[in-house]
Amino acid sequence: MLRSLLLPLLLSATGLQAQSRPLQLGASIGLVSQSSPAASESGMQGGLSAIRWLNQWLGFGSTLDIARTSVKTRVSVCYFYNETYACFRRPDTESVLSASSRLQLRIPGDGGIRPRASFGAAWNRSVSDPNPGERRTFFTPEFEGGIAWGVRPQGLVSIRVRNLNRWSGVTHGQGGLLIGILW
Image 1 (cartoon, one colour):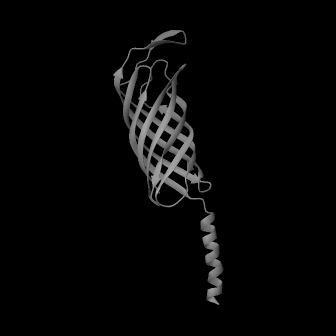
Image 2 (tube, rainbow, N blue to C red):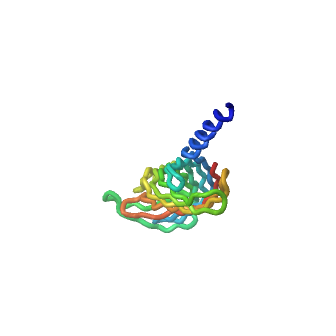
Image 3 (tube, rainbow, N blue to C red):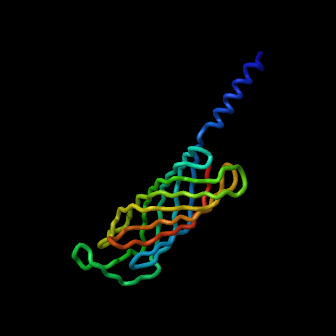
């Protein structure tokens, strides 16, 4: 009798587990490098992420990260902004807070090395002093590709690329090499 009651309960519990859509939380740290019309910069980036998987290979994720960069080389570049002649003057160090939403893709499976990718957009806010002609708040498209291994927790190595749009008519890029862990 007890056996006949437990069997349907176990079957429905395993069916619900198979239908569940796991939430993955993660943290990453890495190196970041970016260009600008006036300088090249590099530094560190750290962040937190959450991914809600819609099925085994497709999910929706968001990240919150902060990057701290320092100027490595300077070039004196001046452009016209709003009918004024202003020069790009990058601060010696800058911190940028970013929040992004992304579509996540992965090769399903347990164990082994599996490719992952994501693409989306990020909202960015400089927390440093303003510069002439520079947007302190700006949106950027982004792409990330990498590999994950393990089951839970998973190791992660990825490259993130953002096309920054901080000045009128001038775009530049940011690239990051990140290592992280996903639960």
